Amino acid sequence: MMKKELGLFLLLAVISAITAAINPAFLSFVNLLNMANLVGLFGVFALGEGLVIITGGIDLSLGSMFALLGVIFIDLLTTYQVPWPFALLLVLMGGLALGGIQGFLITRLKMQPFIVTLCGLLIYRGAARYYTSDSTRGFGYGDEASTLSNIASGNIAGIPNTFIFLTILALILGVLLHRSVYGRWLYAVGKNEEAARFSGINTNLVIATAYVISGGLAGVSTVMFVFYTNSVSPSSFGNFYELYAIAAAVLGGCSLRGGEGSILGIVLGTALLQVLQNLVNILGIPNSLNFAVMGTVILIGVLADQQLQARRRRKAALAGLARTAPRSKESTILQGAASHSAAALPTTTGDQA
Image (tube, rainbow, N blue to C red):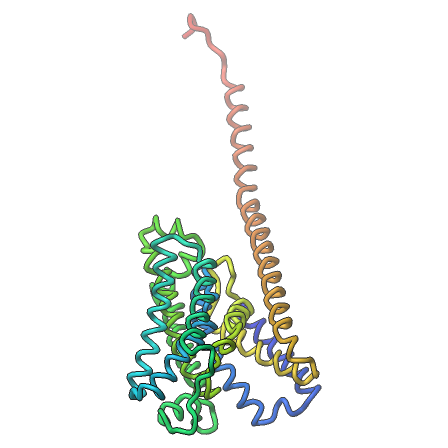
């Protein structure tokens, strides 16, 4: 565990202890399982957002992507009676396709990630509202996809399946990011895309695959959230969920400049957000201030990242001075000795020579 992750874990433990001291019900079995379920739900797409941020990009379209894929998924099951395995596959492919389109626009057409994903936020939400005539879609009283519903919203030995899935996914992405060549490419592209390109890395492919993975995980999260809410309102489903993902990634140590972050940090950041939400509810703060809390968390995370970056630059500069100072002193001594030796030599004229 690195310093950032260790510090975040200690912060999570301290806030949890404070929350439990204010209200002991925080440590109740039911509340802990509910938080574990929410961490699983929000953690899956936060991991995809984290990969995008590591490349130096950002994805603002996740919430609207949930709305569009969600209404399509419910319609496939209820209106068109598509078997749930095919409906699930179509939604996952839809998420991958939307992520691939965004990656293409960013890498091939050289558009800014902020602009591309902001347009995606508007287009996907508008398409979902038009597709449903701005009406809510739900399962009604049928038993459509009961097997998938049990998988997505059930539990094993009391542990929510969403949390188990997040744990497995985090292990897989942890190996991919921290123990593979592709992971090193992600960090290299985020640190300096031009330098990574000159070193032989296909930077366009690396960036595009990050958006594809993010879109695919958004498709998975859509299915889990649909069975969590049992309905989709295209005007509000997934609203501002991209903020949760960005906040979790930033709190987890992902720098918005790119090139930094870890899977463990993103999971801990997601857990910290849920603990903060629980603390807000315990303190009786109105739900209308939830977004204000999220904005404050992101602001504090960015400020802390800037301070850490400035501190590292100062340390690097001091280390560089410390390495060059002895060499400069030594070269000065050698130059003085050389000039002294040259002055001690007898001068000869041409005739004497």
